[in-house]
Length: 347
Image (tube, rainbow, N blue to C red; front, side, top):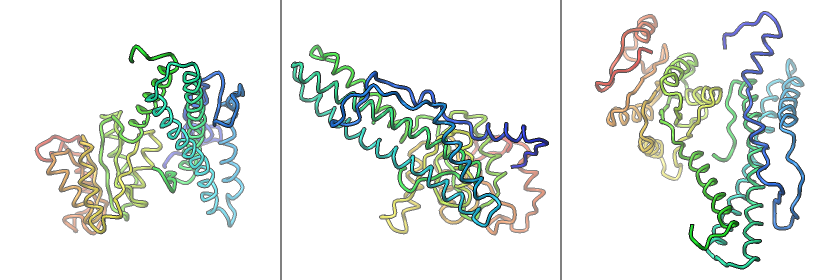
């Protein structure tokens, strides 16, 4: 936010670091010699797209959009078009993911219908090839989506958020082993996506909270002590939660978006707060906001989770109201504080 550059070479180098890409080579890796995307297709020996060319194409697409509209009356629309590009990769990746899930279900059914015949083995190999081929394409599409999302974040300062979502017995033959290996790998991947195994840090803040520096200071300090942290936010679409999500995206920190269940009515946010404790968080940050944040803070205190309360200077609900900014800054840099008897770092 405050970086200054004396020449374009330094600026270009900084920009390249900010949009550091996912591992294209790994995402575009071919798992099988032949690919088959559906029962109608014949197996194909066609290769995956070149990963370097795919990376360059994503950067060129997004850069072209922002360059076209920059310093024109349509500049504000560049972010919407760029969001659409990133979302198009997300939509296709989601469809491939659904097709892969469907194929995985068919594999499960096939495994339960064991038949020692050669026809059975051939059918099982065919289904496994289709599932792996779909997984290859999905990985590549997700890689390009994540890259586009990172460029979107750097250019707009906002994290990309899609509209919609947010897996041997003695009779076992080689084809069955391969099918089971695939299903086990898929299930492990799904678990990590939707229930990350890293230590969870809970975060919430009001929609009017705008102090980016304070949020980043706290989260950077926690990540220094807990490098493998997973951030769980209350998923509001503006304010502190968006700042935290943008920080997580820039640091490649996994995020769990804990949205309230709208079908539960006015109590939904408070029930969501209760569910967040099921993640067994190791630490929490709550920025000033309203009753939802106060409720979450109370629940965290009751569960004896180390808690940092962040108050934006001048906030109406800061106590006491007359407290000046200088003492608040001094408190942040002072000695260790305690919450429920637990020592917390001086930040």
